[in-house]
Image (cartoon, rainbow, N blue to C red; front, side, top):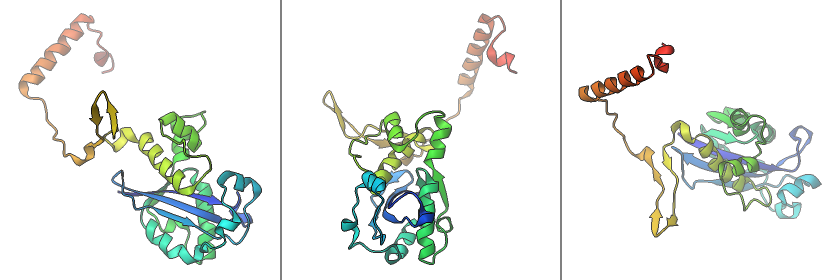
Length: 233
């Protein structure tokens, strides 16, 4: 499965009031493994960022003045995201801005180009109801190192989001032993991805099944016939 983790930085908060995308960061995972095939774009929005937005991302108009317009890179962007499952934190915000940019470029809406959009903010609210679920809060909760995030940056945030997502879904379909590169008492612990192994399924033989039945009978007897599996039957 190809997944793309995406984040944007913008001139302000409201795409419908003329705010524009100034940075796009994308990180690619295939079968839950980082490929290094990332996409990072700075864009000239043709307008200044609001003061509050500038405090968040620190990307100045002067820095962006020689960067391409979105229309100049739209084909590259759409080729990159084509048919991927795209994971975004607070997807409604980023998608609204991307839709606005695509509309100005005469292209279909964002979701027409991808296989689906997953919102990790929605996931986090379901998993941690009543708690703060910003990207920074999730990094702290899940042990993801975000110490380099002094200002928001689209590529850095996409990389952090990929790590957060792996941790959020670790028990679902990833068998990962995450101990990469650490040394402890002279031992070097390696990161092993168990998805690369075709693990056989081995059923119990007749002797093992009989031994199991005997243990179950002993537990039932010791409980006076009140074993929980019998009460639920």
